[in-house]
Every structure is written in structure tokens, then in C-alpha cells.
Image: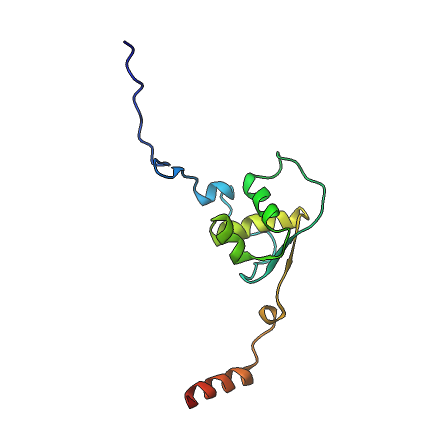
Length: 128
């Protein structure tokens, strides 16, 4: 009888979860997005464009575009796709450069806080 093949233990294989891909592998070692940083509450919306093809985009890119046909925040997108915020930001930078998504930041996120309003809130909380 032929012997059974020997199973080799790998650090990158979790028998319960399957193969584990490190975040830097998805971003090709990049840790910062191209262009500006994205606010966590910014809305991502896919834009109709010619599909650049499977050679250009990774499966994660396609998943982001598919999930963002309806406006979705960056943090919700990371949660829905089970990816870290850092990975999502890098991949969003790729997609924005390719013209496949648009990002919309809420006005409150892009404007500095009004100090008078913050003082009024603190005073109101102290009065409680």
C-alpha cells in the first residue's frame, strides 16, 4: 500500500479558518493610500466606468466596488468586507485613482469644530 502523503504544518494555514492572507499581501506592502487620507465616516460610492478587467484589480477591489453601489461609509465597508481600516484605505486609494469610486465627506468632518458650541456642551453637561 502506498503511504499517505505527510501533512506539513504551515504558519499561514489555520485549519478552522482556511488560508490566512496577511494585510500587507493585499496591499502589496503599501501602508498609505494614494492621495489624501480618508475620514472613517466618509461615504464611498461606486461610479459607472469601464471595468479595467481582472488583471488590474484584485478580488478585494471588486468586492469594494460591488459593496459601494449604494453609499456606504469607510468604516461600514471595512466591517462588511472583514478587512482592516488600513487595508480598506489603501484599496480605496487605488479605486479612486482608477476613477471607480467617489468619496464624499460629511461637512462636519471636513470643518473644524466650533469652540463656542463645544463650551456650551461642556457647560450643559456640568449643569446636570
